[in-house]
Image 1 (spheres, rainbow, N blue to C red):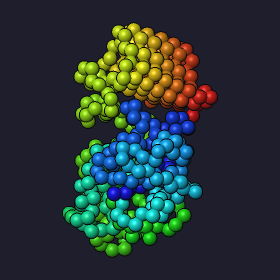
Image 2 (image 1 turned 180 degrees about the vertical axis):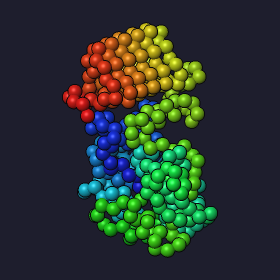
Image 3 (image 1 turned 90 degrees about the horizontal axis):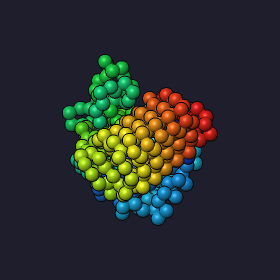
Image 4 (image 1 turned 180 degrees about the horizontal axis):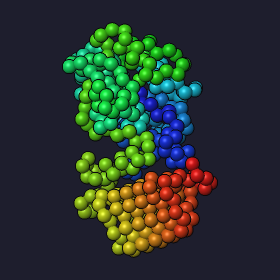
Length: 365
């Protein structure tokens, strides 16, 4: 089966991490997110994926130089200009000649949703489109999708007030589509499938659109808080091994390769990448450290993510924050409250970063 994966966005909410790396290629527990997504699709029989590209397209081609991953053939459709979700789907499908039933998924959702069951549900109902739904506590920031008993979509309600929302089931960004829906999307125009194509399809008559509810794990990784949450969810032990090659040294203490941990204090859950060195008396708690990192003596990393090659100086404190690849935090510095230190950026010794973002040039964002 073929799938279109929408990976063209700029990932502005995660800047400066995405200044040079597209959001789908950022690691989640030391594995590029898109690789996780492709593995998930492959496990449900997807053998060809068209990556709908816009922002930094060459990064994807360089990441997958052979055009394959775990048995999945990769094709690339680079938008000439931003086309919106529907426009991107039409452009990708036309570019690769998709003329049969296919899948679409957003390139920033970490999920265990059963794609096979979604496809079977779609085939049984016989509509043009089927949407996967997930339930959230507060639907006010989403588009909610009330349905009839058989799963047929009754309406689309965009960002309702929490107390008056007709349902807490929202669009999960995963669709099964028949090829005829492509004719409903204008070519080379910016069109939203959520706000334009689907509502118009609903207006065209009954029996064309369905939705299937799922309680499977689902998380949009597109904000710093959610990006941190995704890491924590993977290392807490509830979803199996957090990454290929990770070995559980003790309950929820995971290592990849051969890190040097000396007499560090590891407070589970923790994942430490290959060749990372953690000094004497350093404390790592509920955090992920990438490969080739250096954590000096008496430093502290709590509820945080440290990407490959970052360095944390003696006595520094990193809490509830993200350090980009090759970032540096000087001795005695403090980084806290969902701060982001961009790739290659430096925090001066003794500095205090609170809810801030800095890039490699030292500029606050």
